[in-house]
Length: 345
Image 1 (tube, rainbow, N blue to C red):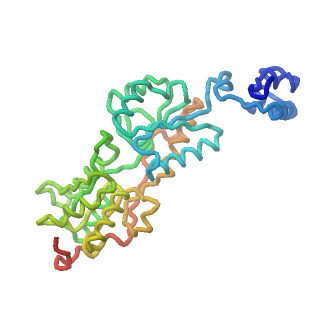
Image 2: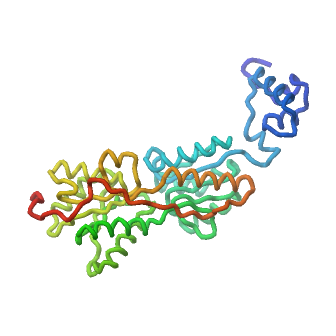
Image 3: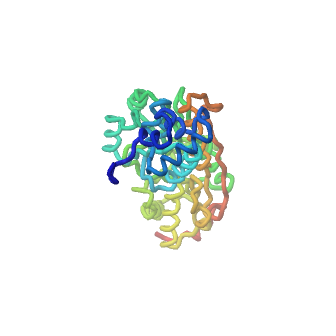
């Protein structure tokens, strides 16, 4: 055998003095193989620099020991990165691998749902962070593998999510209790066709205003071109004849951009304008941002745990989980400011 050619399981079996099937069982940690034989097989494999293929070892069990994640948006975003870290940790502890399929735009979305690359490459699929069309759900059903939905709820399917409507209602109610009556919902433009949870958050905002008797006029909505479009938000506020006194943003990242733009024009939070975020971003404390925090790591860990249970042929104890959120109060929210203190546009 030349140095460039990988060793085979048959060669490991020959060196260890056992059958190929015994090598396969020993490398999977099967209790059917004695500790002494397992140690001999592992030593032979190490001497031959043999690396067992997950696909090959899966032939005996019908499993690949791999979970796939389909994630909407950039992997580098805080939410997606935190989710994937938690999923990876849970899978690694169970000796499972992680495959990631990312969808950032409509072209990637069409490509994935046409080819379904996760087919036969994983034991379960976690679908995270974007809303599916009915046709896309049907296509995923053709995968023939267990599905777990993360950050969304799907009828008759295992899912892990939060109640976005209830969370935003809590935050909006807090601002109303501080005396605010002119509130605006701030959202990033949905340029890629992904819905995420923004619509549910706006529905919660609108529902709480209606409960307070403030539904006589359409709710004020300010749309930024992106998560970094805080300057556009502040410009719209300064140009308004009836500017809001408080903002409910649909993400912490957008709130950070708004706070930066406010500082550049001399607006202070909360003295001039209250700002409430959503997510519980790792940087929220540094920005002193009041926010509606969701347990991101817990969501990822729980989704991975359910996926592992399904991949092993089991039934999860809690197939549908609605995780709690909490209102975290910091410096950026306060009572209604004095109109005389607002800088002129």
